[in-house]
Length: 74
Image 1: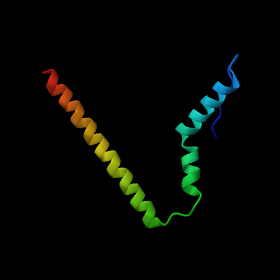
Image 2: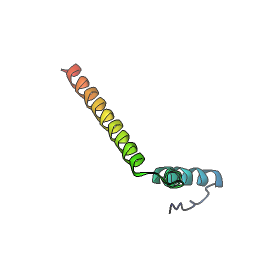
Image 3: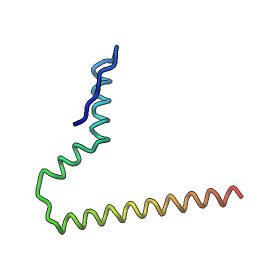
Image 4: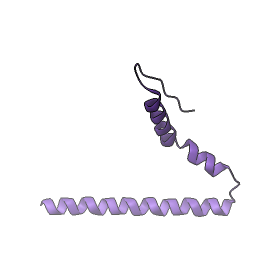
């Protein structure tokens, strides 16, 4: 459960904005959407494999960028 404490002199708008950011960071809404319908085990495996491929590609891309920056400095 996400919880936000109201600061002294803080308006409702900023409190709501902080709460929404906290809920987004905690992944509560995405998990609720994911659990709203049954997902077959085969679909779960495909979704997890796709996420793993995306993460791997991102780390590879970041590693290449960092190595290019190091090479350009020398």
